[in-house]
Image (tube, rainbow, N blue to C red; front, top):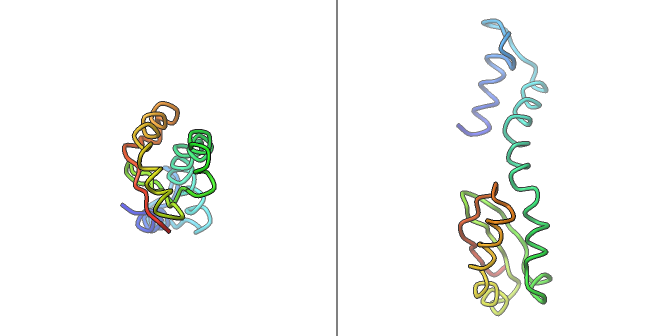
Length: 116
């Protein structure tokens, strides 16, 4: 169920357990509850990742590679040239290993590097 469906369900059925049949919930309450239940948990899962990534990245690559996203164990990284992409790919297995150790909740399995 995606976030839009969750929000629709919350506004139809109420936010709390005590919601009565046929009652409605304000949109603000529904959005707040959705944020607490799903987005805050996701943020906590990945919050340390950027800092750890910055510490692990070899010198010279930091200014040329940036995190682009995380989904299903895939860390997406954008390098500003093919040469930096190649360098990052050379050390990606060590980076994944260390990210798994230091950010286990992120569950990073692989790094995908692209030029952008």
